[in-house]
Amino acid sequence: MSHMAKLNVDIQNLDSLRRACDRLGIVLDMNDHNVRYYGGTQNYDGSIKVPGSTYDIGLKVLPDGSIEMHGDLYGSNGEIIRKACGNNFSDLKQMYTVEETKRLAMINSYNIVSEVETDEDIELTIEVD
Image 1 (tube, rainbow, N blue to C red):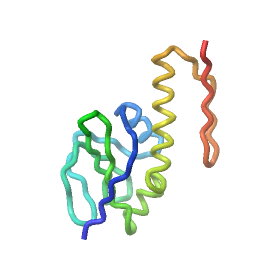
Image 2: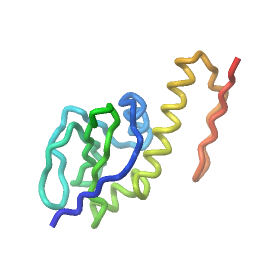
Image 3: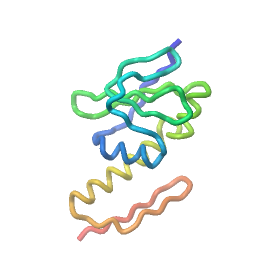
């Protein structure tokens, strides 16, 4: 029985996603199209590998360029993914938002003054001239 679930994450930039994955200790691989889950494997546009889990996160690039994530978050392998990425990928979404904000700030020549991370929050201070 398949446990793959589609999770809504507004991902528009692969470089920011790669940096977010790096921060979480997981690996973005757009060249690996075979995504493992409880029911076997499925073909995707890319994947995210989570160390310690035999399951992967599947990435589907949509016609508008955004990226949809699919993952089997059940059982012990799903638990490993949830610990690495947060429930419903909340930690991955948070890290992506930080990295995308930093990327856009640099494009607009804004200064990133500080980044403070606590247990649940990340405070990013950007100076706009």
